[in-house]
Length: 414
Image (cartoon, rainbow, N blue to C red):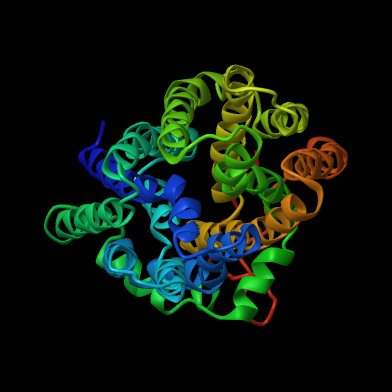
């Protein structure tokens, strides 16, 4: 394995480890400030709201000026936001922390862009799968550490440890991680209108026929999956009466599943099936699994149901990113993955707000039922707009005037 890949995987692991120290604990932390379920949903959504702005911008800037400078900016913002979280003495400080982290939190999409720089198309899904595996391993250890560190309802301690981990990551990127884009390539991209960090350039990317259906899929799949992901702690608190420590341990179990699927399973599946086929099957599995999750009667059944959710979510996430990176020219990868991350952010805005309101109005099963209905509609969309469409050559990247760039090379969509 190439040294840069090893380094970026280590970076991703440390980044996710810090994030998952506090992820399962946020609803409990907010409850110490008397936050209602609806306010908890807003807190979770606030991070994603600013990511709508930050992720595409950081991605486009990384296409022009390199991945490393933008990683430094992103990690520094993460460190400051976690420190704010640990020192919070009011609910508004929790919100301020999450807003800052979202604005500068394009780190995972930047890591994915880095991987695309140092891998060929045929290795792309495997490389992104390894990033996903690092994500999963972080999910194994982070929630356990968070559960231990939060003993006695001390939620500030895990946040401050997360800030320290972010500082370690920052030093590693500054002094060890090499830049993945050569200087001459960065100079060339800085002159290209296709990488301009403008709303118009991003909108053009969304309209292109290779990119549009994949981004639409990512949006609606992400909305359903995020209803599960962001409301999980609140769901088990309300339906199964689990405490913060037990919830953290369940997140660890999910991390093991994610690491296995994305580190091993994806590499095996992509050798036998096309990206579009894997997306279609993952959609079906997720629809059934979310409906089952909604009516989970106890912890043991929950652990069984979480397996297909983790498998389908892991496969769809990695394969979707791989297909998206292949649908554009190399100089647009960072911006396009950033746009995908922004759509992920949009789902993390809508899902917690809607899910918190649904739980308030209809009870704990409501987010799972809503997610299953969204996935049922996406099955039809995937069949008609993605699976049934023959493979074709992606168009060359457009200029800001809407015409193809004369020196751009098309790439095949899989």
